[in-house]
Image 1 (spheres, helix red, strand yellow):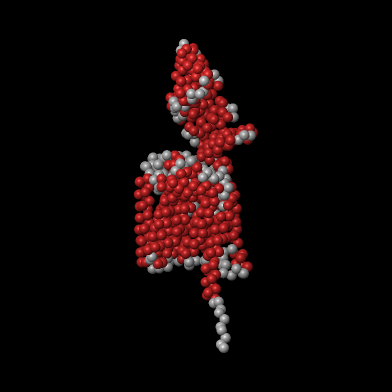
Image 2: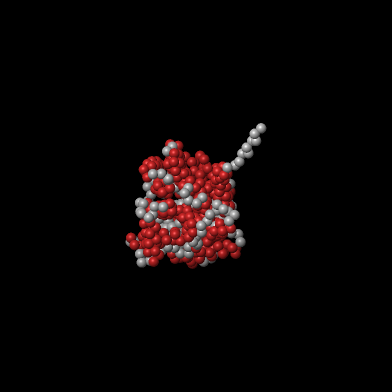
Length: 630
C-alpha cells in the first residue's frame, strides 16, 4: 500500500495567511488605540457651541421626528432662528438621532464621538493600505497612528459639535476607496458608492468639496495604469462628484436665506485689514502658525481671534518665511504633477500628493479666497493633518530605515524607537489637552493662558466666571468667581470695547461685588454703544432708586419702559416712584397695567388703593379693598 503523502503548508500559503491576518490585527489595534486615547472625554459635559447645535436646538430636540426639518434649514436655525450660514443636515441628523437616545446626557454623545473617531482612523488605515501598495507595509499603519495621536485633533474629537469634521472626512475616504475600486474594475457599483459617499460628505460639511480635486489627484499619482486609463477614470469620477456638488448646492439654496454681508472683527481679525498687504501678509503668518502647530502642537487654544494674531504687513519676517515655504513646496508639487524630468519617482509622487492634499484641503478655511467666520482654528487642520501624518510616517520609516519584516532583529526594534517616542509625546499632550475640554469653565480658563490677547477668550472666561459665581453657594468661592470675571472683562474690553453686552455684564459683576460706582460707569458705557439697551437702563434706574435719586431713577425707568412696555417690573417701579414723589394720579396707570398682568400682587393692590383714596376715587378704592379681602 502506497504511503500517503503528508500535506505541507507551502511558504506562499503561510504568507497569504499572515498578510490576511495582519490588516485585521492592525485595524483592531488602531481602533483600540484611538478609543483609549480619547476615553478621558467620555464623562465630559457639553462645551462651547454644543448648545447651539444640541441642547438649545429645538429641531434637534425633536429627535428622529425632526430629521426631515433639518434638511430644510440652517444648522443653527433651531437655536437662533437664523436661516443662513452653514448647511450640514446630515451632521445635525446625527445629533437628532443621539437626542432620541441620550436626551441631555452628554456621556452618550461623547461615546459616539470617540467611537466615530476610532472608526475614522481605521478607515484611514484601510484606504492608505489600498492606495500606497508600492510603499512600506508599515506606512499606512504608522500614518494612522500618528494621525490618532496628534494633539491638533483634540478640538474635533473632544468637542461634540465637531462631529461634522469627522463625518465629512470619513465619507470622503469612503468615496476615495470606492473610486479606486471603480478604477480597478470599471464597475458601476463602486462608482455609485463613490458618488453616494461624496454626497454624504458634502451634507456633513461643505469643506468636503475640496475632495473634488484630492480624489482625482490620488488616482493620478497612485493608480498603476497608463495615462489614458487614468484620465478616463478621473473624468468619470469628477463628473460624478460635480453632480453631487450640484445636488448639494441646489438643496442648500432651496433651504437657506441669503447671508447678511460682512464678517465680524471679533471673530476674524482679517475683517479689519484695510490693504492687500495687511490681509495677505497676515494670512501668511497664520499659514506659518498652522505649520508650526503640526510640528510642535503647543500651546493649543479654542480661539485665535481678535487680537491674538494682529495684522501685519509684508515687512514681517514670519510672513516672508511663510511665503517662501509655501512657494517652494507648491512649485515642487506642480513640477511633479506635470512630470518634470528627474521627479518621476514613487517617492516624488507621494510627497507631491501630500503637499497638494494639504494645500487644497486647507484652502477653503485659509481666508485667501473668501473671509470666513474665524481667523484661525485647530479644527481647520483636521483633514490637512492627514497629509502631514503620511509624510511624517514616510520620513521616519525612510530616514531610520524601519523594517519590521524581521522583528527578531534587535536593530529593527531600535530603529522604530523614534516613531514610538513621537507617538508617546503626541499621546501625552493629547491626553492632557483632552482634560481642558471637560467644561466651559475649564476650557475658557485655559484659553486665557494660551491666547491672552484674544478678546473672545477673555470675555467668555469672564462670562463663564459670572455663571459659576451665580451658582456657587460658598461665599468665598462666589467672590473669587466674580473677581475673576471683573479681571477678565477688563482685559477683554481693553482689546475690544464696542460690545454693549460686555459692558453690561461687567457692570452686573461689579454690582455683585459691591462696586456700585464701577457698575454705573459700565452701564453708561453700554448705553453709549446702544442707547436702547434695556437691561442697562433698568439697572441704572435701580441704582438711582436705591440712592433715593428719584428723578434719575424715573428717567431711566421710563426709557426702559418705552423700549419694553411688557416688562411689568418697570411698570410697578415707575408707579412707585410717581407715588413716592407725591403724584399718585400719574402712578395709577402704571399700577393698573402691572395689576392686569399680575392680579394677585397684594402690595400693588394696597398701593393702588392708597393712590385712589388720595385722588378721591373712593369707589375704586373700595372695590379693590373688597377684592383684597376675598
